[in-house]
Image 1 (cartoon, rainbow, N blue to C red):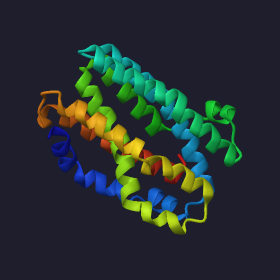
Image 2 (image 1 turned 90 degrees about the horizontal axis):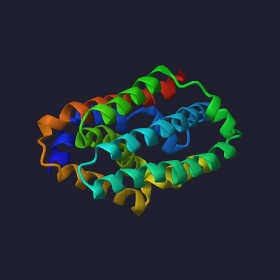
Image 3 (image 1 turned 180 degrees about the vertical axis):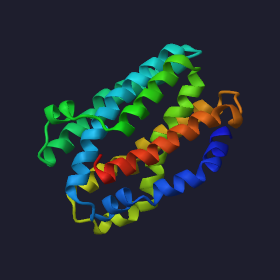
Image 4 (image 1 turned 60 degrees about the horizontal axis):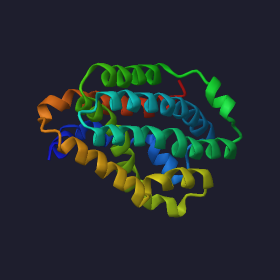
Length: 212
C-alpha cells in the first residue's frame, strides 16, 4: 500500500510529532492554557484555508466520486469542525471574532500557501498526499497519548482530543488512505508532497508551543 510506504518513509518526522511537548502535555493536562488558546486561534485560520485547499482539490478530481469526496471533506471542515472549534473557543473565553482577527504566524502562512498552491497547480492525488498528514497524524497522536486522558484534569483538552479518538475520525483517515492507495501512483511520486506536509505539521506544533 502506497500510504503505508509513505508513512514508513516519514517515520523520523512523525516520531518527533508524536513526542512533541505540545501534544504530550495537552493529553496529560499539563499544557499551559495560554498555549492552547494560541493554538486554537492559529488552527481556526488553518481550517479556513484547509477547506479552500480541499475545494481546489475537488476541481482537480479525475472522477465525480473523488470530486464528491473532496467537497464532502471541505463541507465537513467548514461546518462540523468549525462548529466544534466555536464551542472550544467559548470554553476558553475566546470568540469567533478573536479567531477571525488573529494574525496567522509564519509557519501557518507558509503551510497554507503550500497546500493551496499544490491543490491548484498539481494533480489531485498529489494534493491528497499533501493533505493526508494532517488527518492521519492527529489520529496517531490520539492513539499514542489517548491513555493519558483518564487522568487529564482539563475538560477542554479532553473534549478536543475526543474527536480524534472517535471511530468516525478513524474511518475518515482510512477513507483518505484508500483514495491515495487507489491512485496507481508510486510512493516515489507522492513522497515529496507527503514529506513537505509532514514537516509543516511538526513546525506547526512547534510554533504553537513557542507562541509565534
